[in-house]
Image 1 (spheres, rainbow, N blue to C red):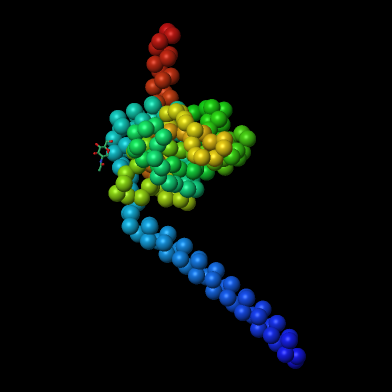
Image 2 (cartoon, rainbow, N blue to C red):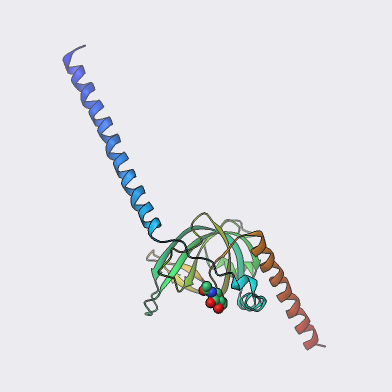
Amino acid sequence: MRPSIVIVYAIALAIVVGGEIRIRGKVRKRYSSHRRHRAVLPPCDFNETIINDEWSLMEAIGQSKFIFTGKVLNVKKFRSEDGSRKKSNLYTVYLRRLLKGDLSDLRTFVKLEGSQETLSGSTLLVERAGARDACAPAPRPRLSAIFLSDGAGALAGSARPPSPRLRILTDPVPLTLYHLDRVNAAVKDCKETIQILSFTQFK
Ligand SMILES: *[C@@H]1O[C@H](CO)[C@@H](O)[C@H](O)[C@H]1NC(C)=O
């Protein structure tokens, strides 16, 4: 082998190996800082009172214009722009199923539209006011929850144009069969109550 070819090989090898080591270093650094951050704050506990107390649940359902299930894609704390300097949790949610509310009304809050008919697979931004400082926002990304919203909205983010965000009334309810049963039953009871009330009114 000619010496010049050996030198070219040596240089090429040095570049490839050097690059690999540099990239690995960066990945490791990012990963460990992420883990450290998570380790400091335990996730906030979900307060089950809203589900277990009949009155609290009926009240929340009655006040909700939209109730839907979805998967959390991303959640971060941010300072509200309303001057109160309080923090909110801002969730990016992948919509699964609407349990209560009008699809065409909800469509105005959708950032990226999924299915035309059901809006399933759409993403939307959801704001929960009053983030707690002592714990990390829950549910974490990749977990599913039930969201109860009164339909009030605002514009969020520094992106131009800002995306509309939807206010929720309670912390996202972790999606379990029990929670879903309770919410579904309460939505049904609420509908029946309204029907009975309107029926007696027009008699
Ligand atoms: C849970 O919520 C109820 C009412 O919504 C409240 O009275 C209670 O103090 C809360 N519990 C905790 C541990 O925060």
